[in-house]
Length: 142
Length: 73
View 1 (tube, chains in turn brown, yellow):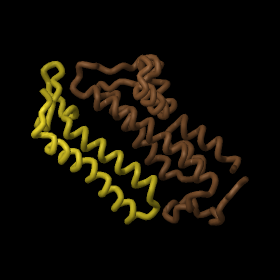
View 2 (spheres, each protein chain N blue to C red):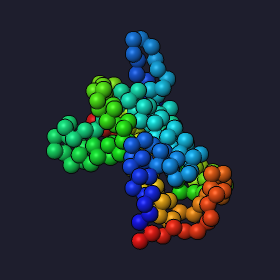
View 3 (cartoon, rainbow over the protein chains, first blue to last red):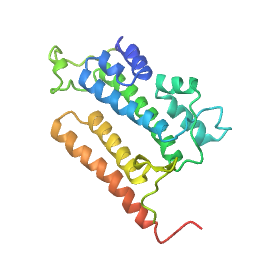
View 4 (cartoon, rainbow over the protein chains, first blue to last red):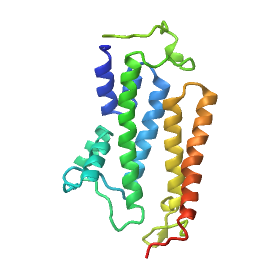
């Protein structure tokens, strides 16, 4: 395991794209940040709700959705701290909740992607100018 | 089948709450995300983006029409 794996994953979890930025994929980092933040804020803006363990009432799928939404990292916890809640009577309530859930799941994928990149399981991107300094060798830590 | 639903807040129609628009935005963001995540080359990314976007957006419309004969009562 590469020693950069854990910091990259923690950064990726906290802020969308931060892990990729730490690993040198800066253009992608900005793109991922924009996409995930857009999804999350759009979901809140259209009266969507956050899935939380408190409101899941033991329902398995809602509990899973809670953990999925938590994948958005600081976005989720800041929204939780601000007591963001959706409007059930709104026509876009379900849509908004889906947007926020998707943002969380996307960020979880980014966390896993950071692990792959840090451990050399992904080829350096030829189009990324920040990879010009890479020596092209896989880093396969133990 | 209701293809558009517009929520009226304070008497004003908000186009962003149109379900078709929201479905479009969702498909756009998801397709872009996975195209960037899964592919490295520009052409591959564009192709992946188009496939995923069409599957989500057009597929959603198609599914809606497929369910048209079976309304919820």
